[in-house]
Amino acid sequence: MVRLLNVYTISAFVALGGVLFGFDISSISAVLDTDQYKNFYGNPLGTRQGLITSAMAAGSLIGALSSSVLGDQLSRKVTIQIGAVFWCIGAALQSASSGVAMLITGRAIAGICIGLTSALVPIYQSEIAPRKIRGRVVSFQHLAITCGMTIQYFIQYGCSFIESTAAFRIPWAIQAIPAVILCIGLFWFPRSPRWLASKDRWDETLTVLAFLRTSKNDVNDPLVLAEYREIEDQIRFEREIDSNSLRELLSKKMRRRVLLALAIQMLGQLSGANLLNYYIVYVFQSAGVPNPRLAASFQYLIKIVMTLPAVLWADKWGRRPILLVGAVTMGFWFFVIGGLFMRYGEPEPVLNQPYTWVIVSHPAVSRSIQACCYLATATFSASWGPVSWIYPPEVVPLRIRSISVSLALATNWITNYALGLGVPPLLRSIRWRLFFLFGSFNLAAAITVWFTAPETKLRTLEEMDEIFEHEQPLWRSFLSWRESNSLDKLAHDIEMGKLRITRIVRVGSSDFHRALDRPPGKLGNAE
Image 1 (cartoon, rainbow, N blue to C red):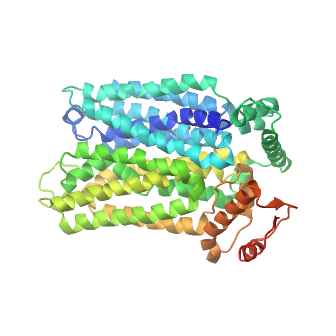
Image 2: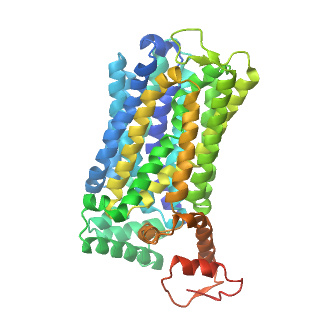
Image 3: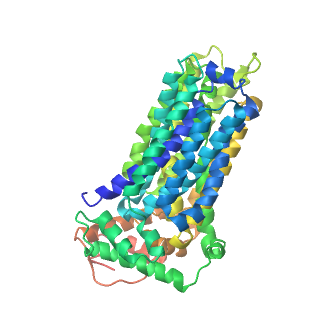
């Protein structure tokens, strides 16, 4: 644990980039129904409110597309610092905004920071972490997002009782504080060892690895030297094949991996979590939930609590089962919510409301919808929320990691922009059918993961080529979880001394599965 302290500390600190993301989400959701906000900005509804909400995603798209070039040229660390500067500028414009146009501009500039940090923080975390805890430390990103959402929501809620525009100006100005801490604090943290290696800064690479893996910065530690040589071999191999990153990105060998990274990010957005993140107050108002702003606050506490299991056990449970169970369960909750609105709802008689379908005089139904929203939030926070940040940076090799994650996050922000812009008018037009739409998206996500996503837990970043190149037929995809767990047990037995390695051979998938079916006690040596 002493050896891992540096990794945990650095990963937790750099996750302040996720806190900024969470601040932005709650900075809008907590003010939507306040009189101060509606009176000052002219009660924005439908597409107008959608433009305000989605401006952040538009800026994030620019940041995500820029992150590849900046992250490779300037390093992950320096680019995150640049993003923090953009955030401070955006926060200043939002808090001083004199109208909708200035508010949109401030949110778009702040979004550039979110695009940069959301792409590079998970890469940085995955590149400094050993494989045994990589999923855990990258999960810090989602935990930080939920913490940021919760903190900002309660700041907004407390300030909502101020009878002036300070009700939203003060919270928007406070957003700059963690960005300043992040920008300054990173001067004392190292660059990614894999980025240093890609720039032929080998002495620094070894020094950073020793700092991350040992308590005494021992550059002669066998584990440090082994990882150093693995990185060195991978860099040499990539240069020998003279890879062009753009050409390789589109090659048949990498196409599946890149598309899978894009799909995981897109499907995470289409899960319906952002409907609840941005517009849960609207949902609770239309469902007849009393005091919807206070009721919405519990959602953010649930997010923090339910993210912790994934942080602690993502490397034990595996990415694939978490995504499968999460998608099916979330789909169920959204179908239940849509069914309750369809059965007990009626048209909203009052005009100029952000919704046109309400539940009246059915308190049990209102409480049921409220509970299902909480359960959907809990499911996302324990599954797709953290794993959608873990998966994209770890499935692609170093030579195209930045550009691949950049495209994956661009897909995220395009989808986020479409949802932020489209959900308000859809709530008014298709009403309860919107929840059925998100339920269907979740079922599509489960099918996608079942047939295309292999298990990657406890594998080094340099081993991903092996995982994806040794394909198995789709009809055997249900064995992926079993195979992964069996490999984990085999590795554990070797580590504990129950098995010993006599020689290393390469076997095919059929050989492996025949070995799994051998009676207990037949494997005295591990090959």
